[in-house]
Length: 300
Image 1 (cartoon, rainbow, N blue to C red):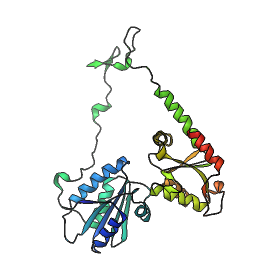
Image 2: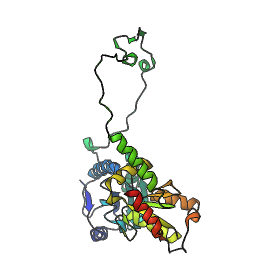
Image 3: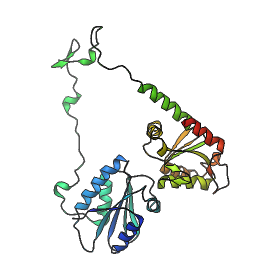
Image 4: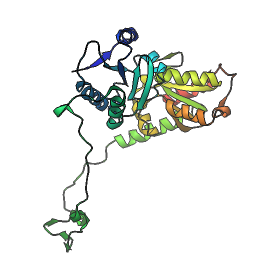
């Protein structure tokens, strides 16, 4: 049976692709180690691969790439979110699937590589169907605050002599409030604030590098925060923005989104950044020193 090949480098990727016959279908899966949906997609991909017989020369090849470790390859396929799947043949992209929907991934693979053999127990399970039972719609009979067959605890009120049922509120509540205040100040430290991996001069992931390039091209001056340097801010921003990945962009103190959202905004409105342009096109970059000082102060 076929297996998924983990690609460790750009040279290994180029070598593998060039070794395949032009008729072979290549399934390229982009992932990151920190994104939970990628773990599920890895299982889906390995299950699909196992349903195809190993042949020489191969007719189908499954590859797995870390999108952040190999940013050049990610950018060449326009990967802006993970998990991300590309189906190609002879260097030509046949289909792309963004997200962790197993049925969409399976359909895309089978559409271009044909259906695999009988996977038996390794096959992907069908979607579960849930039917509402008639008894779920029936309200249980209540008598004097009790449900027939048991106690109705929703009616219970503790007495003055009852033992405490929960610990006193810990000091973590105050810490959360402090972090909330800190993040509120941080997102407003400059008119445009970018929370990224690394710095504009040395981005640590392809997504951050791409969004820095967009801001530069649009002539936007911006403040930035390297979330790799502060784990509290890194984890706090995920909740604060209700957005699990980085980079994250704020404009005027309001959350814009990640790289994919920024691209969508520019596609629908090419002048999206017009209010924040402070340099000629192609010369955007870090905000004035005083803005960076504000950002540093907000993180202290």
